[in-house]
Amino acid sequence: MQEVLAFREIPPAEIGMPARVERILALHWRACLDGTVPPGLPPGTGVDAAMIRAAMADPRTRYMFGQDRHSRFWHRELAYLALLSSIALHASWANPAPRPVSTALLMRHAGLSDRMVRLTLAQGIATGDLIETSRAVGRHGRLIELSPPLAAAIERRNTDTLGYMAGRLERRIPVLPAAARHAFNRLRCLMVLTVAGPLGTPTRRPIHRRSFLFLMFELLAGGPQPLAPMVAAAADRLHVTPMTVRNTLALARATGWLAPGPQVAASAMAEERIGLACATVLHRWALVLDLLEALEAAPERAAEFDAAVTAAAE
Image (cartoon, rainbow, N blue to C red; front, side, top):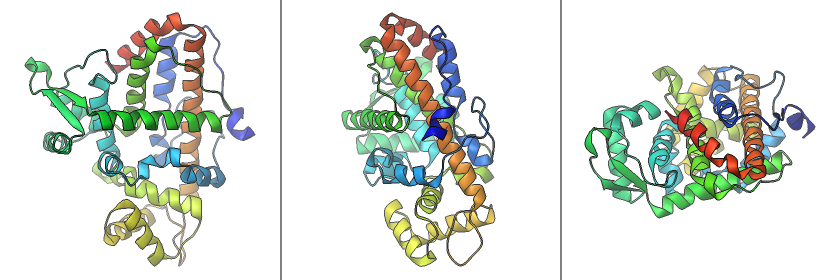
């Protein structure tokens, strides 16, 4: 645990809210999957397989690979998680009143086509996850709200994630001033968007899919596994066909994420990159806890925080 704590740089108490928000949003793990160290992460940091095993076993962190309908639908790829986060960013869950959102903005945030955005919105409305309060608001788009069950699920997962990260960092959870609640929810949406936003070229998209990430985390947590049992178990957990799992493993092997050998095992590159991604997540949440401590100590800075998050979202 000392290795994790050693790289947490505590900023001075007088640091401004815009700088805090900027640092949090600049530090995200997706670049780690391509072998890039994110800006703001001290060199030489990483997380070993033991922490990955602990994270995979903790129910508070398994929602990305969960069995519930919300997880299977909105987390099946990072692009759809980005779409949901963009919707939440404009909903009353994160604002005093809902704000209109255009299809063009949703396309930009999620990196999805116009057709896929409209289709996913229609599916979300049909299942009751989303509530369209007004189909058109001038040229600005549509007013779309999260259903109470979906909003509650997001809130619960945010609380669980904060609790887990505070525990890993051996930090207490500061009390968030009520006046900062909406801004903090918007910050959480932006944190997801910086990770799950447009995914670049199509050839890079598969490594950001839920199935690919699940398989790599499972291999790092559980070690080498025989092919047939792993394919069957992963297909059942992910609610996909065995062929989908086999295709994902073939992609992982072709791109260097699997080690050679008769069993399915993560490569050294996979362990390094996933470990760096986990370390980046921890460091980012250390900065979030620093921000919450600053707000707890000076609740009057809630307006400054709100303005900083609003500026970051523009």
